[in-house]
Length: 623
Image 1 (tube, rainbow, N blue to C red):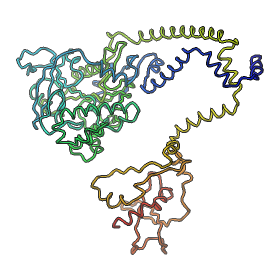
Image 2 (cartoon, helix red, strand yellow; image 1 turned 90 degrees about the vertical axis):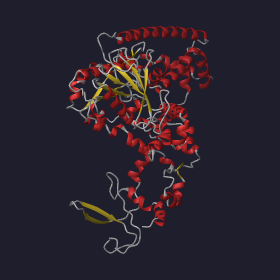
Image 3 (tube, rainbow, N blue to C red; image 1 turned 135 degrees about the vertical axis):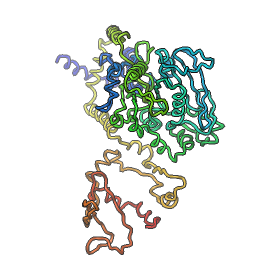
Image 4 (cartoon, rainbow, N blue to C red; image 1 turned 180 degrees about the horizontal axis):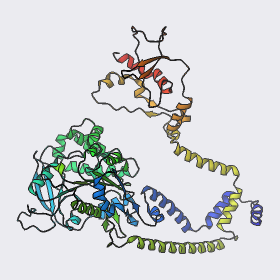
């Protein structure tokens, strides 16, 4: 109470609030400003990079649980997956890589396997295309052509990223490279794309016939998992735009490498300007694969369309923070409905990364691959047919790779990490204490005997209450603006000209050239009412206040063929005695089908009747 009275007396001096604030700011050590700036940058970086180290710390560095999605009556789960410890454990990311972006970047720069040399075989497909098969055998072959012995019994793993680790565990591995990759020229007019499975089928059938005694296991990563990664979900967040451009840059390099062929088969001018995966698919994939539109290409080649037909053991693994293959692309319900599919998801892992341990020397998903495959080989669900690809077990690593086992012989990094974090906190506390002592010395040297905190309190006492109210109002306004997705400021910056109406149509569309091209409203702009410049306010206003002038429908009850009753509400341009349109009427008839829970009383139905676009179509169409 005494301190409050002293402040009241002192505040009556000649100094203004601004002068007191400047004096207080001068007393704050420069390193405190540096720490404040560092804190702001850290928060922004934490949000931008989607770091989760604080969450890991709050969970005691136990990692995120592996969530399994499967059919309750799945024999694959009860006979195979239930015996895999890694699929019933947790995954903890390397603490200094606790971000999907850092993991993905680290994998691309430093995440290569130990150095080894493949043995290359060039396989010629039925259409004349060349496929490079890169072999890594579990044991050295004595044959002069280094090929796998026809009497070999060790499993043959068809994979792209696991060759080294799996060969050390007794697997023979062969990597089937896509056409035009791996330093091999394209020798036919057919290119690979996300929905092109013919090469995989042909290669596996070839391997089945050449090595009939070898059990075959297949692993696919990234593009082989889900075509929806191509565009629908890759650009939803700020950082994902960088991945879209980076992948587009790589595809552009691929196209330039095979320019003589692609300049003939695709739209080369579009390739030179492409900046996204969608643009590549538009100028290359759709043309080569003969799809009319990119959306049609995505729809027809989405793995979600085929998951329900899987008839062999299939393990799909995905990190929910994958910046390339996002959680929205996962066909959850389709996986749950098929007894042959097990979907494993982890909270973290990035794209094809899953680093673990303090030194990030291990990829967590490679352990799960080996554990699942060994368990599958020992089970009765291991098919050994020799001819058809559909009869061989297929393990698809959905988008991310797979996950690693929790074994007793692996040192526990959680304890080490926790101890290190405790030590760091103690050191930080020591630093904070030292900083506080330095601040006291700075206050003593600042003159007047007043600390920065005391000066700030004095300055705060001089600020009128209405200023605090205005500051609070400003903060609330910013939050409301963002929460309601208001855009009135953007409208103001554009001079309230509104947004342009974007038209999407086929270049040869007669409907556009004969009808839509004559509609001025479709070639103009739309400016929303400024005081409801929010999608939520507009929708709410439509439901509450958006009623048209009052009028009465004439109702006709129509009986459908199955006995159902449909209410037809009429509003005639010319009054009729019975309220029903005359058979001889010549005025156009507009049929309106309401929304999900709407009826003829909905405001949208009325607005459509008076829309000025209708009149343009009346004049242009032969009704």
